[in-house]
Image 1 (cartoon, helix red, strand yellow):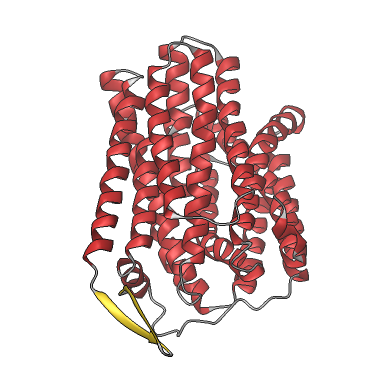
Image 2 (spheres, rainbow, N blue to C red; image 1 turned 135 degrees about the vertical axis):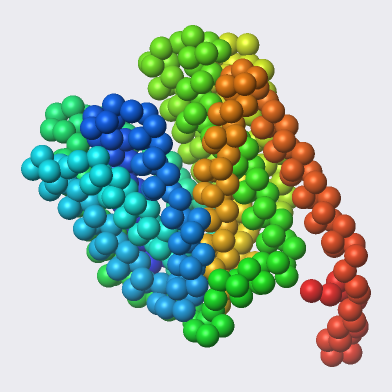
Length: 411
C-alpha cells in the first residue's frame, strides 16, 4: 500500500502535501465563514467559490503548457510562495479589521488563479518522482492525504475560528506552505524532457488528446460524471433539509461519511499496482448508480450507507483516471493533458451545479440525484461504446521485429 514512500523524493513531497492540504482546507472553511460574516448572503458565498475554482477552466490549460516548457519543481516553488503570500496578506487584513467583501473576493480570485497555475505542475510532478510501476500508488496516496486533510482541516478551522477568529486561520495556512517549500528544496529530481517552447502550446495539447481515443474517453467520462453527480455539497444539504427534515448536526455527519468513503476509496486504490480503462469505467458506473440509489433512499440511514459507496467509487474513478493519464501520456505533453483534464473536471462541475439545483428545485430533492445519476450512467455507456467502435475500426498494421512479424492495431 505504501510502495511509493520507499522513494525518498516522494516521501518529502508527501510530507509537504500533508501539511499543505490541512492548511488549504482550513483556509476554505475560514473564507466561507468570513464571506457570510461580511455579507450574510449565501449568493456571495457562491460568487467566492466560483472565483476560486473558475480560473482552472480558463487559466489551467495555459498553465499546463507553461509546466511542460519549464522546470516543474521551480514552478511549484514559485506557486507555493505566491499562495503563502496570499494567505499572509489576507490574514493581516482580517486581523487589522481592513478586510472588506471586495478584498475577500479579490483574495479568492488570486487564490484561484495561482492554484490554476500550480495544479497541472503539481499533478504531473508526481510522475517525475516515481517510476511508472509505482505511479498509481503515489497518485492514490496523494488522494488519501487530500481526503484525510478534508476530515481534519475543517474541524481544526472551526476550533481556531471559535477561539481566535478567521484571521488566525489564514495565518496558519500561510505557515503550512513552509512545510511544502522545505520539501521541494530537499527534492533533487530531473523533471523530464522539456517540450519545445514554440510547439508546447494549448492547441498542440488538444491535438494530442484528440489523437488518443483512450485519453479522450477518460477525460470526457470524468468530466461528464463530475458535472452531473459530483455536486454533493449541495445535494446532501437539499436531501437533509427537504427529504429527511433533519438538522445541521446530522447534515454534518452525512457530509463527513462521504469524506470517510472518499478516504477509504483512496486507500483501496493505493493497493492497486496498475490502473486501466476498465477501472475508470467500472468506478464511473458504480458512482452513477450509487447516486440513483441515494435519491431513492427511504431514510437517513440508507442514505448514509449509500454516501459511503459513492465516496469510494468517486475516488477510485478520479485516482484511476489521474494515474491512467499520467502513465499513458508522453512526458512532453503530460502537464498539458493534466491541465485539460483538470479544466474539464472543474469547469463541468461549476456548470453542473446550477443544472442539478434547477432539477432539484423543479422536480424535487430526490430528482436532483436520480435524473443526473441516470444521465451520467447513459454518458459512460455511450462513451464506452464509442471507444470500442474506434478500437474495431482502426486499420491493421504489420510491424516487423527481427524475423518475427506481429499484427497490431495501428496507433
